[in-house]
Amino acid sequence: MNKTAQIELIVNGEKYFENVPVRMNLADFLRNKLGLTGTHVGCEHGVCGACTIFLDGVTARSCLTLAVQADETEITTIEGYETDKNASDLIKNFHKRNALQCGYCTPGMLASSIEYIEQGNPPDRKKVKEHISGNYCRCTGYQAIVDAICTTIQERQSR
Image (cartoon, rainbow, N blue to C red):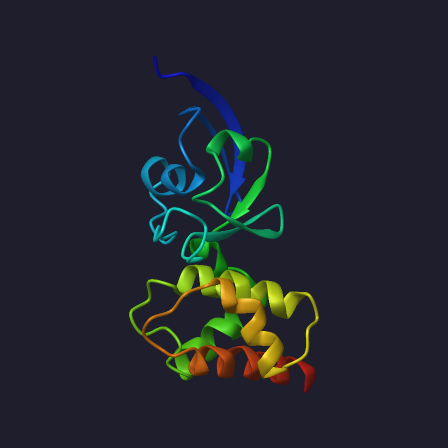
């Protein structure tokens, strides 16, 4: 028997009322029910970070969160970053530094990077590396990503 539950949530500024299977994870809900395929699923164990999103302003692994747990929450996925003025300069620096080669880790990496920056952390390469260590990237070697994050912080501090 497939039990379902009604959930209400805000995703990227839009309100949704959806009936979902109680065992559906949030990543599958976002991708398959809402068509927001920018949230990637890698390991399905919460280790790789590809599925990282913002859940009520805090980063969360959407592969480990059930959709029913997101009832009455606000979610931001990579599709919502383009209209977020706090993310636009980071995205620009990811492009400039070529920090998004294949793009698979990028949605989760951006979420972790945004979190680091919005917490008011310094452009300290060691601290940045520690913060994004839960996000795997097999293309860039992380240097370009760290450069983009540090550059964004430095630009913001010089304003």
